[in-house]
Amino acid sequence: MAGEGARSSFWCQIIADCTQRRVIVPPGNEFGARGAALLAAVGIGRYANVESTAEMDDGKIYRPRVQAAARYDQVYGTYRMLRDDLRRAWRHAAGR
Image (cartoon, rainbow, N blue to C red; front, side):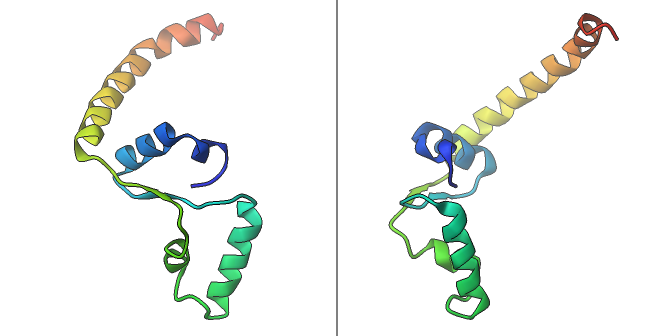
């Protein structure tokens, strides 16, 4: 993960929990240029694949928490119910 969202350990952990995947935040900045260079390195055979390039850094790794994911799933279900219930009211307020 990169960009402004990667600066927040809270946000990175939420993403790891909800996706049930590791989130790796590499050190440094200029990730666009760095990503292009790493893709070129994979293209010329310096690295076997993109995943192996992520392992070379001393970046921060956020690991998913199973119990947190279950809680987020429950809250998401409530959000979807509320969204669906309010859709008619939003359309009415928008004049449609």
